[in-house]
Length: 248
Image 1 (cartoon, rainbow, N blue to C red):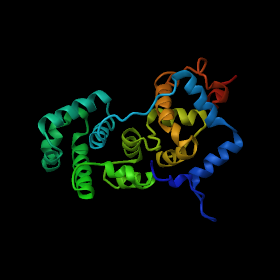
Image 2 (cartoon, one colour):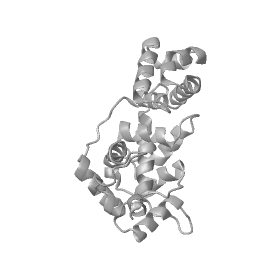
Image 3 (tube, rainbow, N blue to C red):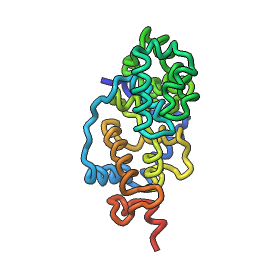
Image 4 (tube, rainbow, N blue to C red):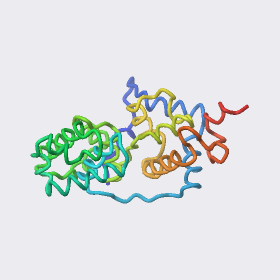
C-alpha cells in the first residue's frame, strides 16, 4: 500500500493551498462537475485498469525522449540508445555529444542527452544502482519533488513515472489533459502547469486517477480536438463551459 497521500490530509489552521481552494470552490460553484465528467467519460471509454508499462528507469528515459516530439520518434531514439549502450552505466558514462548523436531521431538531442545522464546519475547516487523502486516507498508529492529536482524533469514527466510505473495517483497534465480540463472548466483558463498538476490531486478520487488520465487523453484526441472540437457529439456538453460560451 502507498503511504497516506499528503494531499488527503487536513490542512493546518491558517495555511493555504491555492489548488485545493480552487477544487473546493469549483465544487461549490458547479456541484458534482468532476464526478459527472468522469462518469460521462467512463460511459464512452470504459474503465481502463492500471497495469505497469516499462520498468521505472526505462519509463523515465523514454519520457524524457518524448518531450516535444512524437511517441514514434521517442521509441526510435530509445531503441537506438539501448542498441548503442547495453547498460545504463554505459549511458551515464557516455560523452554528451555521442549520446546526443545516438538519440538524434527523438529531436532536441543536445538538451535531452544531459537530462538523461543527470537522471541516471541521481538515481545511482540515491539507490546505488539504476533502480527507481525506492520512489514507491515515498509519499507521492515527495517522490514527485525528488524527480523534479533533476534538471529537465518537470511535473508531467515525474507524474508519468509515478502513475504508470507504480500506480501512484498523480495526474500527468499533457496538452490533451490541459485543453480538455480548461474547456470543461475543471481548471482555470489561465492555470499554469504547476497549478494544474496540483489541482488534479483534489478533483478525482485517488483510485480513479489513472482512469481519468487515460480517458482525458482519449477525449482530447477524439471529440475535443484542439481546432475542431466535436461539441455536438460530446457526452460532456451539458456541463462544458466551452459549449456554454459557443451557444447562440
